[in-house]
Amino acid sequence: MKETLFLICAYLLGSVPTGLLLARAFGINIRETGSGNIGATNVYRTVGRKIGILTLVGDCLKGLIPVLVAKWLGLPDLWVAAIGLAAFLGHVYTIFLRFKGGKGVATALGVFLGAAPLSLLGGLTVFAFVLYRWRYVSAASIAAAAVIPVAVALVTGKLELIAMSCVIAAIVIFRHRENIARLRAGTESKFKA
Image (cartoon, rainbow, N blue to C red):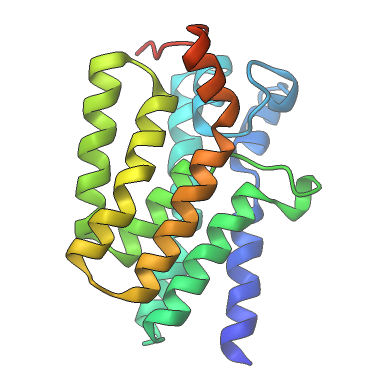
């Protein structure tokens, strides 16, 4: 019963639309600006660097905090994975925006930072390389998502975490389907620092 309640709380925390709230504080409806996405990249491009970084940190914490609390409470890996996934799903399918949320990259970052920090190094390395080489945040996010399950499997070997990482990676890539179409068409926006 306690674990189920915690699962719901993790989903609700993940559902808090950080980017939307921060942009709204500056009088901007982020869902009607830029790409329309509530994530850090769109906030960065449309509201500014500082608010974009704050969105990134906020979205990351939504994934990190529930996982750290679950581990601190000594919950088994199955529940840690389920709670991390719940927080991630909260961001992607937020109840506060009729289940239309962000793409989940920053929240996934927080989940893996808490659940499998060493595995995250592989994903971050790939993300940094792709972003540096081609300047596409979307391509870097997709590449990192594809690598994470392999890294989790190699570093932890825990089936629960591997399953969680596979689900998260699949959803992140699926949520980038429009970006993939733009990448193929050569119309995707490049990252400008």
